[in-house]
Image (cartoon, rainbow, N blue to C red):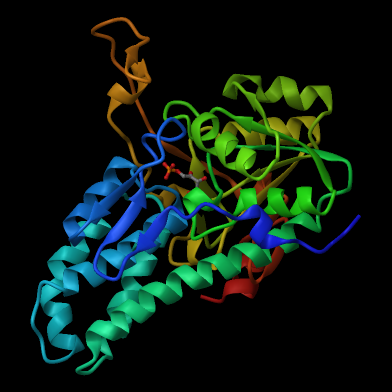
Length: 352
Ligand SMILES: CSC[C@@H](O)[C@@H](O)C(=O)COP(=O)(O)O
């Protein structure tokens, strides 16, 4: 087994590109059938892209929103950061309202507000530097998490992941998918299973495509095949990302994660959450307090534009769920590994 990880070999996709005067977003609604970037020239276009899932994944929407603040700043004249902040605050609120569950969005906006409030005449440059720092720190955090998470995995393991948590969902390398990339690179993981992730198919459309760019051949499964897969003994870990990790370790992630955690515990499969510290929300005490985004029920009526449900049916489309901390074996952030997370362990690691 070789513990060295050639990060560049596994990290080629960039979903967010800042051109110097516009934000380009890899259109994740069209992947894998078209690789097209959408150009955003103002902050409302960024907010609309976040809402429409053109850009998605908790860290990625935080980074996109930070660049959205830079775009909002172009529309105002102000002598210092405090004046500028007052002028762009409505735009920041529209960015914040684009999606409710991933805390990285509010976290990135709070960070942009903080530096702006302390800036002088050079406030535009201060904002651009901070947006770039948020992106750079995310990439570094993912690489660190990859190494930390992979170290928990015994050589010869199979793993199951859910949704898309890779380069597409972050500044690069990925959270759970970063752990998987690192685990494959080190020879610890010899089989990767990816759930389709109905209804938006992040697993089928994005994760499988991303891993194939790296020369990793994943096996796609229907979401409903997960318990059966676990019963076969082919996976030792379920590895997922997070949209918000609470003070007690309860974790919101893509709908379907909770049932994977229940099934994993039943079958003796371990359950890992990998996320940067920007996903940790020590102000939210437990998962009960997390707002779960509900999207258009129409997302359930069709696949790829073809109707699959009868006409005039009702549907409910919550797109995240909360996994209680008791079902989580390890939370991995760039700051370290928390095994069997609870409030005491979270407070010891993150304060608050
Ligand atoms: C690094 S990504 C972690 C989560 O953001 C991911 O698992 C997820 O749930 C994404 O949901 P999405 O609705 O596609 O934005």
